[in-house]
Image 1 (tube, one colour):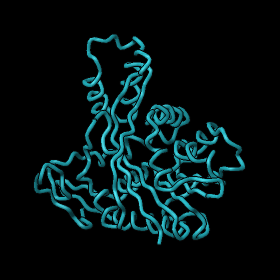
Image 2: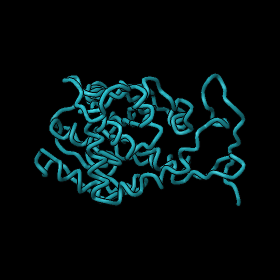
Image 3: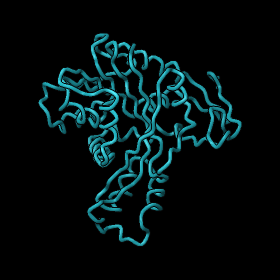
Image 4: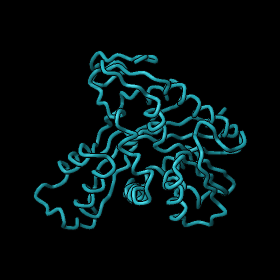
Amino acid sequence: MNKSNPEKCHGEQNGLCSEKCSCREPATRSFRAKHAHIYSSVRGCEKYDVLSNFQDYQGAISSFIHNMCPLNRGMAVLDLGAGTGKLTRLVAPLVSYVLALDRAELMLRTAERSLQVSKSLVGFAVADIRNLPCRSGVFDLVLVGWTLSSLKSEFEEWYEDGSAGGTWRAELDSALAEVDRALKPGGVAIIFESQGTASSIPSRQGSWLYAHLRQRGYREQLIRTDYKFPSKAVALETLLHFFGKGASKRAAAILSPEEDPAEKMPDEGCIIPECTGVWWRRME
């Protein structure tokens, strides 16, 4: 097999997985396969929406957005990789208009069904982040939620000797260029990506994707977007469905082992930590 920009792993450095580190878990090898069934079925999309509604009970995402770009009724927002509408629902009541785009039509249908503001305030369209169906310089805020990691995995290639390559950097740069094109002068782009589920400390600081965003001029911050589930049983089943056995096992270790899985938690709920990385940049 021909290799495009091969990246050979050589071990851990300073406690973090670098771009040339053999200890990196090959999560991206199965990323598409693991989530394809979710995005392509109505039931899968609805279960994903349930998961996203449990996330960030503290409201950290909304607070971060408002701190970086105070929202008002005169603003237009672009939500890229909108999924089932988590970010769209947060900002739509506070701005003039939101355009929500995603490649998965069923995800957008789920988002539209859950919308609680006038549909005249939100538009939905199936689109690729690398080729946006919008005019240049029209949005005050562009949100990119948990989307670039999927794009990276689509164009990342892994080889039998453990090295990696592919054209993912070029594809990401195409997406970031479209983000810049859509923004007004002075507009803000905010990118959200996972830094670890069922973990109180970030576990992906060595990500090649995150390093690439830093190289492209994005500033970075870590926030906690913890999940709040009604019970241990719901927590473990929901995390297993989307994140797999690893996250579910970590969550089980965090929760009280002697508790009946079917028993509802006290009023404070069942809390599972989540670390989220945020990258942002203001358009000059």
